[in-house]
Length: 162
Image 1 (cartoon, helix red, strand yellow):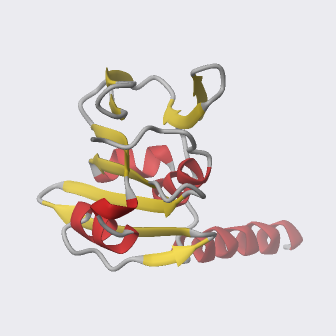
Image 2: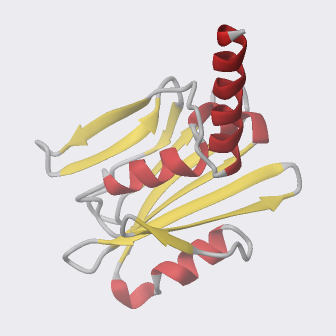
């Protein structure tokens, strides 16, 4: 019986963690560095690079899930371009923005795609916006909003789009 209770309690803990939004990522997020460490960010392992560093026009990093499960993007904007809440809510088609760990995030849906966006302002005033537009299955595999928030915290040095 003791083992039955242990297993039962484990299931309750997993259910509670699921209810409060803790995601279990099946896809690892890789640390990426550029410009001799002047820029840093994370990307889902195995995703295909579609766009990248552009010193002249600003950085716009885009990665596609190889099985067609969606897209992950990173952009930076100057403070004069907008606010974190406006960027996040626009990217999630009206998702309600919530702040945690100095990162503003929201979720939404667009047809059959799950939308997630996180943004934060760095010490220079640049706003980093990270977005996921993916299937619900891919969203779970990459770790959902928790993983996107963590990637946002690890983003630095991205050149704002001009």
